[in-house]
Image (tube, rainbow, N blue to C red; front, side, top):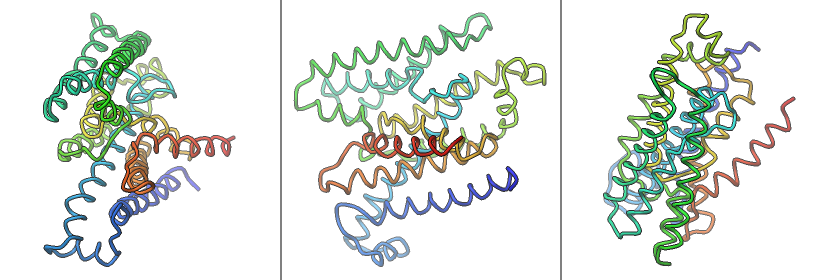
Length: 325
């Protein structure tokens, strides 16, 4: 089987799985809604309880979960090629740490959701600016300095986050922990996340040929005529934009950006023309399934979706690694 045919079959399979994950998210929940009622609510508007459950609760939630998973998987794939590090994930450069500090400070002060989102966004943007400013000097882009700056900033943000959790009243700690572990239920504005996902994916696909060359190494890429520095800067800001959009939508959800690109590579796909869309589909479907389980396993109590992504993702990746020569 040729590589292109193999990738095409995987693409068809992932599309089917993604659609299946979305429909499973609509079908299962803390309230049992028959399959026929789900279909009827989707196809025809009606003033019924089933229609309200589907359109007001479940449809926004599954769309939020899919967009967030796709954004994290895309950001992870881009950062892994930028840093040439298989351990890179969307949070390795301190973006989530900055966002967490901003969000938790707002929660500690008792601010509302809008101000919490704004301070979280400000923290994420500040982290992006600090890391870029310290690693890009006089036209020199040092990836080792970039990685080290991000790791140091993440460590500092973790210390500040721990301090805030220690000082916070007990009544606020649970909400803070849900933000830190990811919570799709608080997602409200879906359109910015979906627009970001579409734009970053399309632009990345347009440069997929250059990304394939860059994966061979910077020197080879320069020799083959690739403008390496502008491409690296574009990857950094594209991945950062995708990460920020995911953080604003559902908080910090771990493991998705790390394991999904790995899983796609372990399935035999290394060409970025296929790797990027496959990662988006697998990441979106994976997080949608995880969120569906998070709100149904112990219903009506809801689990942080970040816990489920770890419990599902780690065994899956270990299985793929054990089957790979």
